[in-house]
Length: 88
Image 1 (tube, rainbow, N blue to C red):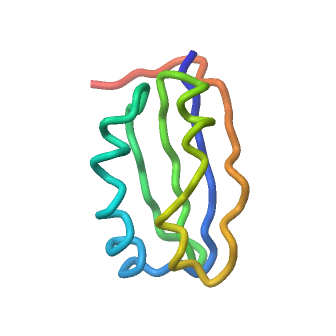
Image 2: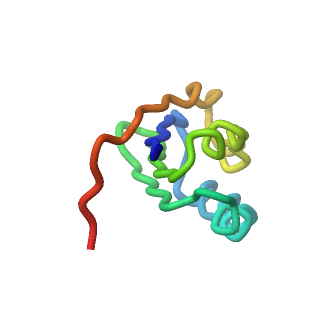
């Protein structure tokens, strides 16, 4: 079952995210069930949304190394079962 994983890192800058995310991109791409990672800067911080093809894989990778640049501790990851995906 595909899941959506979302968390927020208040106060994180784009520079901090770019520096830290370079260390995890390949391991994330290689992770079983990984589909996509989206990073959006809004409201003075970072919002991350990920799509995973396997719920257990998304829940195993709850560590967020790139959240180290956040001014405050990132929110706990939220998970939602995806009903339908329509993509190209």
